[in-house]
Length: 499
Ligand code: UN1
Image (cartoon, rainbow, N blue to C red; front, side, top):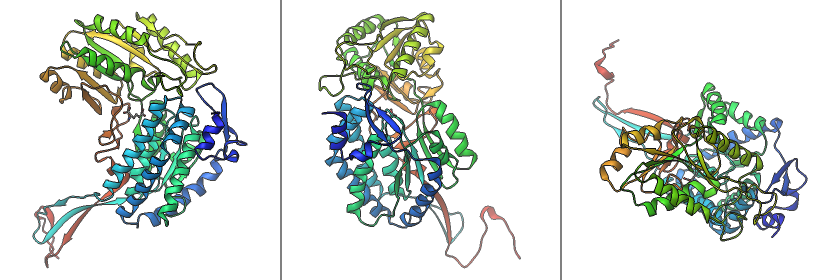
């Protein structure tokens, strides 16, 4: 199938994918897949005003009824899973199974949000005053901007949107300029759900495609109380303070520099499988990708030898082929950054295995690379930097304290894990003196998190939480209510103020 046929099979028309100003290239072969229309900064005030109007209506719809829309979205996603997955592969270069996996993640968050729509619980609180009752109520907060990255072009939108919708908030979505097509297909799928739902307000979810000026309008508008942004630490460093300065609420999911500690007792066969998936899956372009391996010195050489062997036989190539495990990087600039990082690592004393550009047996025009293992003498500046590519830095350790110190000694704090069969080590790693990350796992890799848990991390990762657990609270405002059903007016703290 040609790129255009894939897009048309997913419901996009010729007019929608031609004639615009933004050229979209497939990382598979670098070919131009479409030219789409861009939103201009001048259009943004009307878009934000529409969202505010939609909010006025949507906040009054009972949450379980709002959940019905998300239930229908989940149904439509199930029906369009193959077509949307294929567009994820086309536009982000993910292998088929990961493209489909991403759509499954969308379905999972819809299911989660439908349940949540009947569980927007607040507490009842014991009042110190006689004849009084306290409670808290959760209310919708307002339009939510969702700014997403190329690497999870649809799942991250759905994490935010499914929750925002049941929480009573309209959504304005700004996808990465590299992946507007998957976003356009999602809007088609959502339109089908909206049609079946019937009476949702106009502009409940809007898509804006464009560059920094469009994002800027969302970031700066007081009428957009929530800005959920996923991407680089650099981007978050600009967005976060601007949103906070106007008293908006940023939800940030930024860089990761995720590590695995492999202890002497680890099941090495399992560890190798977990390492390979986490480090080279999605060609190392997940925010949760495994980037640092901290291996006990007694097993390090054996582990590296096994990894280098496993890496040698990984099928690299066209992500549309069922047997491929490593597809292309998003673009050539990304490949250049990988090469530069490897050069830097070498100059810091690293020994590099793999990491070369692959030019044969792959579609021409794409940026295909061998994943790299880089044995490092210590945790250098390059190791502390997130490079969005399949580079795995390996370091040794002698004591668990030392391993945890290395694990935590980076600016990012997203995901982490330990492979050990020693219960003391596992529990220490999860304790207050263990990993400082938002996600910490035992005997599984750092990537591929499920929807049920809160997703996000500390330090330069930005502190936001999305997806499962009580992440929904980030999309609502909490109101504390005190109700006096007595005939007296006692003051709290025993204060006397008789008039
Ligand atoms: C991301 O890379 O931005 O845990 C999100 C994972 C996926 C989500 C990654 N569920 O790897």
